[in-house]
Image (tube, rainbow, N blue to C red; front, side):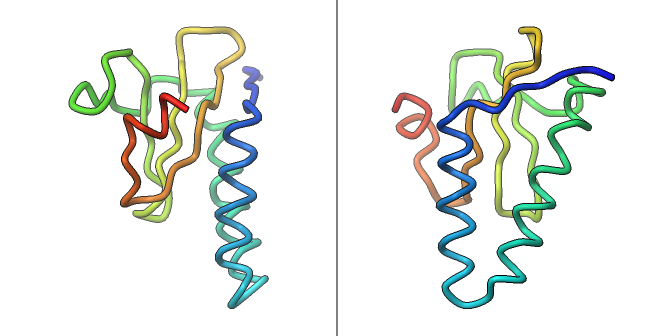
Length: 99
């Protein structure tokens, strides 16, 4: 099985997403986090399933949408595949990725 790593920034994103949803519904927050995390090994197995967003970043990073709201941003060119960020819709992606 292919490997992946999740950077601390992506872990922090997941915590913030979970915390925001959990204010109203802990079970829903758990489901969203599970759906996002379930995508990580799939990306490692099929690293080309994302799409580039050169309108947002110059790098050849790939993006995959989960639940129509969350963007997993990852670098498929390194081993192990690296999950850089998990961003919710509406954020300024170039600014977020530069942090």
